[in-house]
Amino acid sequence: MVEPGLIKAAQAGDGEALISLLREIENHVYRTAYYIVGNEQDAMDAAQEALIRIYTKIGTYEEKAQFKTWVQRIVTNICIDKFRRSKPTVSIDEHEMVFQDHQSVEEEVLSSYAAQDIRKAIDKLPEHHRAVVVLRYLQDFSYNEIADSLDLPLNTVKSYLFRARQQLQTYLHDYQRGGVRG
Image (cartoon, rainbow, N blue to C red; front, side, top):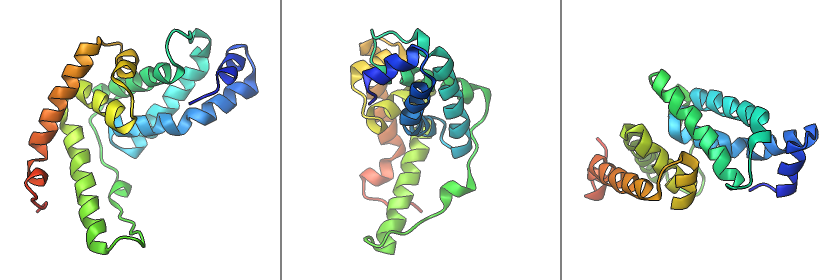
């Protein structure tokens, strides 16, 4: 994800290295925040807060953990705190549909509905299940990286993922049977 030399330079007080480091991770931080909190505005707020925390705490990073898991832990904790403090809102912009040239309108509409239903199903998960699903399937973290990021035992991560998959299957039952959203 990020060159170790850049991290060391940022920790040593090199301001330009720190800015470069933050720029390299900002999209990753935002994407994670968006998948966890579920809307653009809250994700932008959480990402900004995470980047500020990384900026101020870079000196506390130890190479015991991978840098990406350290960053992920910060982002996830901020998002969970934000989720606890406020009720989720929905942005009108999220429902805008942009059609691609390579797909038919029908395929694009069905794909959009499926994505919305999957997003809604993930949003229904308890926050600890949602966090592991986001990290595993949307951020492609290994089980060990998830355990490190969330400071959970490995078996707990596996258990949360198992239960989350069961819940998602229940929520998405119509799609499993080939049904269409009505």
